[in-house]
Image (cartoon, rainbow, N blue to C red; front, side, top):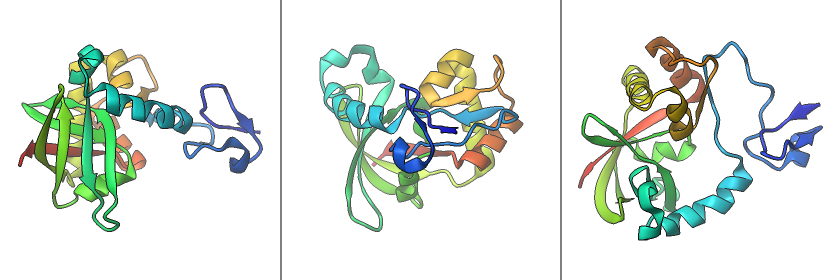
Length: 185
């Protein structure tokens, strides 16, 4: 019997019964880093709340931990408004993600970024170099520490230690992780 990663411990014989896009077979325990996104049902409930809350002073310290990206899809023209973790690395603002919408920033794209209660027009650029992406993930995780890195980056580390750069490189490759750098437009 396969398990999905819903918080309530959904057990299903097949994907239809689970109802979650984040359905996974048992995790390969040999991987040093795996993705650990919240269940889809939680994201559907939390994202609208975060989009609203981050625009108000009620969000407090969350306004410096998260940002809301507003951008247009390259091919579909669909408008996206997505709350994501905000990461400052070497003075630049990054989104470190594994979501498929990252491809909208290939070659650069305009976006409006709500960060710390202020909206700014910015340009987001997908970092195509996997070695650089792994380095960014590694440095960001090191700056947070083991426990906070897992929470802020949506990752799970196999051992109670900081993974090496080589392990981050493997995770970038296997989990299709990406970095998007945001600069002033």
